[in-house]
Image (cartoon, rainbow, N blue to C red; front, side, top):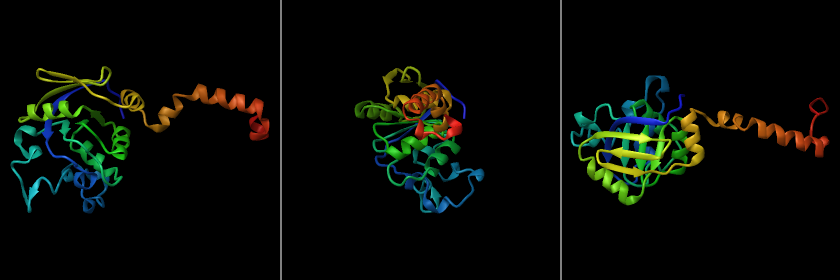
Length: 203
């Protein structure tokens, strides 16, 4: 997974509150192998009226094709802990999700799969959704924690550790390794103070 500091892509608005992971990918599709791709299952039931795609649904519109930034209403990604919800977003081409609030587990899963959960204020989120009556080009500056859509320029919040992982393309193991010197220093100090905690060959 490669790191990044700036993303430019087409943004599409989803003005619907409380889109949870069960809606992001219904459970019946999770038996499919990941290698087959989950993008076609993203928001499957919300995008259809019966068995027919809803032409008025934001992601079904022709002008939304190729979107990589999803701007959503509050409480995005709540519900169950299924990581497949993030797989569906990634496989559909999304790299950034903007919302006033996210489910906690979804946030961790998103970052571990290279997706930025960019949190904005409620008023800023409403402003973006209003501007995205039609999809538009957005610039996301991860280093400066700002996003731009036309004349709109606003900050977003992201956990500093999550930001570091995304910028470096790290998973949790990589993040731990980045503290290798501090971990070794702690181990050496502990070994000197309490040698009995280490095996003889490690002293």
